[in-house]
Length: 503
Image 1 (cartoon, helix red, strand yellow):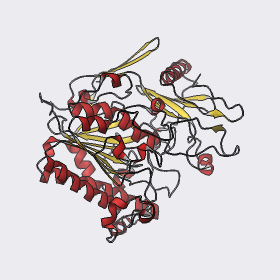
Image 2: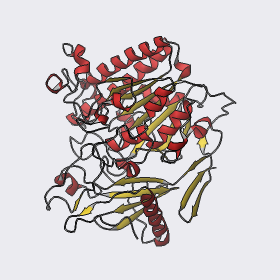
Image 3: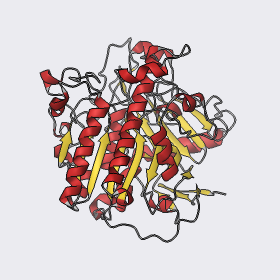
Image 4: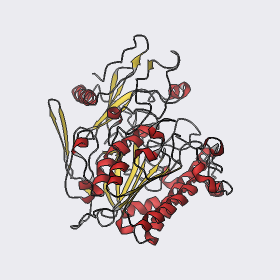
């Protein structure tokens, strides 16, 4: 049985988690000094968008999607049932992974370049002066540290780390030796050749070799990944591969040869197309797993599977649902940032194990660095918000966090008609402590409190029943955001930032 202890001291938030991962005996394994590491990052994939359930029950999505390779990965690794993106939108999570910093800390709090400040009738507040350019050389990046330690660092697919024309728009400037199809764009022009407007604005010119073919974009990116793995292995150096698919982001365009088998009287065309997009991701995962076997490097390669934000349910079909979670991408609710996550680490992670401890995307930075046997510079340690998860993965002990998990999204996502249809799409901050989650809504200046163990769909706001707990958690959230120097939305009339969360 797990124990979770929270210690609150003046000005200090120390969360001590005692090991709670289901396991068999892992044995006493020596960590490989420099394993190959693959981060397989999907775009907009929801928590239950696979055949593998990430909840206590199997839901309709698990029966609808066909993902045998994700199921295989879960059988061969550790499944995390309480894994989170760092934000309900993409760029903040992607930059949190590369920097190890929570978006509130880095001030990269929206997708790049994000929506602007529209007319008064469209939004109550102005957005803060956030870091719209994204990452640059002032951040010490994950691939930079790995590269300096002798790793070949490869990025394939969606980057979205920086605004057009800035340093961060090119992954080469952030520590990657190789970058294919990565730039400032957050979505492809098309999943079909020539992948939209690639010839016109160089969005996908790295993939010109496929322009005369009919290869689906996910498959083209996978072919490039397989080629780069071959090259990296031939060099004799360990490699880090950031395999960042554009799927399953809009446009919702299905893999045409696969669509007929999904057609069902109860499904619309967007849902059929989306199912084939999920299948293309699973196929890519299977091809990469097979390549590792063929090259004889499977036992010395870590593979981490994750998504960058919650599944899209606000428009374009909607193509999926996040049930039993509430809402989806862009929302303050669990559906906005709870994610499928699996880690396969042969000889270290017990196959078929699971962990229900809450973890977050910025944890990947210190975790991957530890897996690689690389030391984090002393000057960087205090800047990191993520926590090394290897004690959980190896099932050897506890992890200690500097503060509970927090989310900070002081922006408006999507068009007004979408926000009007879903009140959970609004500027917010949130904190999770144990099974309790508190959300602060800036427009209403109100808190919502949920017990996720009993109410995973966040339907029963317990603020009135537990006012002292709500007040304590709101104070914790405020203090953490203060320590991160987080910015809040700006009052349209006065031009002054609105107050941080308060009860």
